[in-house]
Image (cartoon, rainbow over all chains, first blue to last red; front, side):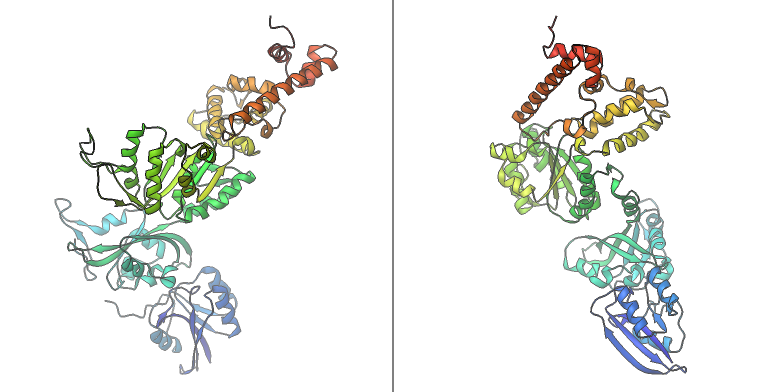
Length: 112
Length: 474
């Protein structure tokens, strides 16, 4: 079981962790099957608030795009894995994240 | 010039004899530049923006701009969207988070790219790194603003705190203060910290030109508007379009031009001499004066309605005499400036020289202190500035005022009426005369002892006694 959080902007990953007003939390099995998918709308965009939510929800992995070093270090210190600078539509990211196929700076877009 | 996502090398043709690469030119520009197509996909990044974002041009190509710039605007209101709604470039401050997880304050200017038919074919954004400016502000703490304004007194700290706030508004500003207090620096600092910083900062001294010339200088004229108008002139207002116009000595603006300025501040439309059409100009007006405009308005010399419009934000600069410990700070600052300029290695001031400099009231304010130190550094041949290196007129002043609080001895504000100034001077003369008489009585007529009690030299006491008629003139 793994709990993954992805900050969203529309149907895509949010360009900024600190400014995301919506997140998607997915729970996957060790085989990569998604057993829960839960969007959460935040009352205000805040990096501190999001970190708090991540700890309360006991999230294992955060997949995001732009994140400040301060919050990156805080989350990793709290044993949360952060995969940052990921670019792409939410659907593709969920698919790859569930299979543990993501790494920082991945671009899941068809270019051109 | 042809731009497309497929093309790797963008060439400019027709500018030189042979084609030149666009990228090569953009890479030399010290500001980040990005071009997008109509779908807001990156077409190119220059070297500066590569450094700012952490993306190489190849990595960024065809990505949505929001994933490369990662600016706060991408979440709060896309600049390109705003650009399409507005006609003209947009300039705003924001921040971005780059690949290195750094949050960088930036100023972004976005503009559409039009083809020869005027259709929008893409967009361009200029991204300026504001860290050097912020660093300068933070490192120097409350003592400096943009490296030009110096002070740690309560009054100056208050000004430094409110300056960035004033800069971010677009309202007219009226700066008041005695001559030499730094009104010009403040005006420029407001412009440089504002969203108009990329635009021009045009300064006009309203008192420096005759009335008939000033009108065409400010508002411009059409060709043939008057004898000698052989060419059309845009005027300073139009030159300051998208920037700030600084009207110094606004109190000297003739009444008929005050009406024209008032009309402009009302509708932002200019009417150049000889023109039947009005011209819309986007200018922030910053005005400054050492005069008391309220008094002038009461005397009918300045339009009250213009004063109300200019007085949206009022900033009063304190005279140097009221800035307490700033005098010492400025002394050290100017010494550091003039030492290398005059190839000197002066380490500081003797106690006596320091005493004289701190005790002097500086009617010419910071400008006068600067001039005094320029003189002193020039004439100083040792390692410390001594009394003898200071201009004579300060020493003369010092002999009568030494030991007194500089704040209380400061020349009364120019804004005060002449009668107040006269009254203050009279009361000082009376007081000093009485002090001398008292000291002579206490010293039982012994002048050297009286001089000692008064803290002045024997010859100075003799000169003053003569001046006040305590001893016969001849």
